[in-house]
Length: 283
Image (tube, rainbow, N blue to C red; front, side, top):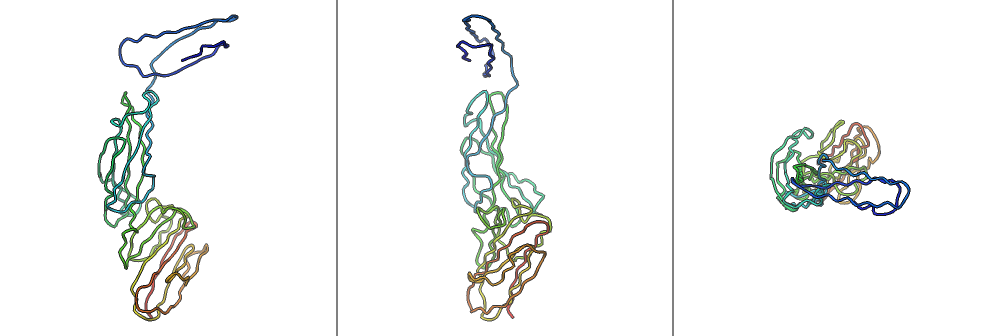
């Protein structure tokens, strides 16, 4: 501490990590005139915990199954300063959510150092995500941690004929998806729940995209939405129910040539009950 200047009575304080044993303390003082006050003391304080920071990846980031996830982090301790890599450890677990909400843990990997990596796992068709915890330990055994969640980008590897879906935590289908999936049918009545872990209960949107092989003929397309829902065939808007509403069904016929056609369904929920259903059948 340095208060070496003319001043009225002023208090200073600081903390410093000390090893066990003898230490020399020097206090120096001068008085310029008028009142003269000097008090100096020291006492052991409760250890303050370190703060861990995960630089990458970002919380909520999507990864394709089999992709390498590179981890980078650091920690600062009030007494020790920047902690060395040896004081940092990572714990990676799969949060398996078979009913879409209640999740349990599957241990995946433990790692050490300021940087590390693991391969994003395939945990089947049930909803799941990966929880990464960075733990920092200071010289006195104090622990601080930071937790992030990473989600599978199932849409990235969705096979032809299946339906790729991206969910967004807004009603405008904008920004980075909060979660993705690869499904066989659009037939959802979520009630008051969320579609997947990481997605809002209310005020979310979804985009469903698929390429299907059709025989030539006329097809009946049906949509049911609570709230907004719309359907495109080969980029052309066919059904538009893009508004706040209770569960409402729309139908429209369209003649298709033989071969592949792209179907896109977009949906948003404003609140309360959430329903999204879409189907098509040859007449």
